[in-house]
Amino acid sequence: MKIIRKIKSMQKLSDALRAEGKTIGFVPTMGAFHDGHLSLMQRSVKDCDATVVSIFVNKLQFGPTEDFNKYPRQLEKDRKMAETVGVDYIFAPEHDEFYSDSFSSFVKVYGVTENLCGASRPGHFIGVLTVVTKLFHAVKPHKAFFGEKDFQQLVVIKKMVKELNFDIEIVGSKIFREKNGLAMSSRNEYLSADERNKATIIYSCLKDAKRLFHSGEKSSLKIIKNAVNLINAQGFEVDYVKIVDMDTLKDVKKIETVALMAVAVKVGRTRLIDNIVLK
Ligand code: AMP
Image (tube, rainbow, N blue to C red; front, top):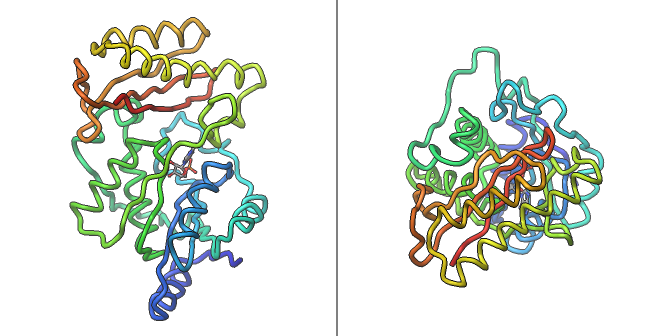
């Protein structure tokens, strides 16, 4: 498996693959792989002739007080893990080539970025969309694979791709969880054993919401209150608990047939997100 560092080299390689008639699958990541990442890679390897995985901790999507500096970086370990699932190339661009000192071009999608993480993390989605655009132009994939764990990110990227005519198919993939239900995340590494244990309340409260909904409760307010109480009882700070329309990501008061329940919780100093479809 090859590691590619330069944008030009990546573009040349992709041009060559395309000239050979090969389909390119792409999995953008920030590294520190877990089974959730590997599941996206496996899908790409199955669906496409060549799979490129990018590893880039994108400073642009972190707020000034967030964890950019301490975000786990483990290229060699990641390379080995990606190799086990048949990934062909890792694209690990250098920060300075990606963002020059005079960098001043940004991508913004309105509407679907305003609620949930967009409200809690100002500028986050501009950072995500700008890096994803740059990565797409470097890798030139036919298909790109994203996890539903970052549901808002998936919706926002799909909208950008559609509205700005990127010729790329965006594929969403289900959330991978630990045996105890905790959604896998590179940030779980920050948790103590006790926090990791207690953080299972996040998925429990989502499952509880589903149970309430299935037993006839349609009021978002009541379902949200129940979840907030459960999270607070564990001693965690709620960033948000919301029930939103699956497409617009706007709050819904009464759930008709389907909605997304999304949560962001501060477990100690670690911010974790998760979601479930109420259907
Ligand atoms: P990250 O490295 O955290 O930026 O994530 C890279 C990709 O992996 C994104 O598309 C995420 O949505 C996806 N991902 C992260 N965690 C999970 C998970 N637990 N299950 C499925 N996909 C995930």
